[in-house]
Length: 149
Image (cartoon, rainbow, N blue to C red; front, side, top):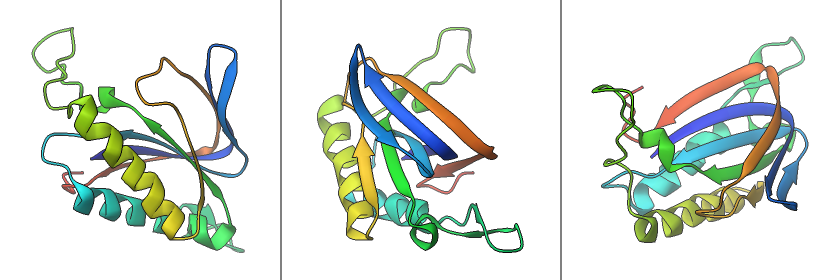
């Protein structure tokens, strides 16, 4: 799994005129599921997200996690994180998991985060969504279940 984690002061996910999710202080996570990902990767990446220390402590250092600050998590599925454009201008998405595999794993990440005590909202799987956010910092971290970066 791959995740783009952004510390936000607010975020909103919409499809058309419908607001699917909205959070204040917390993390907006764009999540991609790849071939070979399963429940183990879902639990591991959820744990890494909720414990990631990207919020400032009293001295201004990034030393607090989502759990420490009582922040919210907005989780949005994004298969394009597996886009490979190394061979040209049109991305190849062959490393992204098929929707029938990816959707339950995205749900598993959300449930695992909830199991850690985090309030989680989500987008709608396979929907065309508009994501608005105010990146706080800005702070953006890349995570990969294979720890390749």
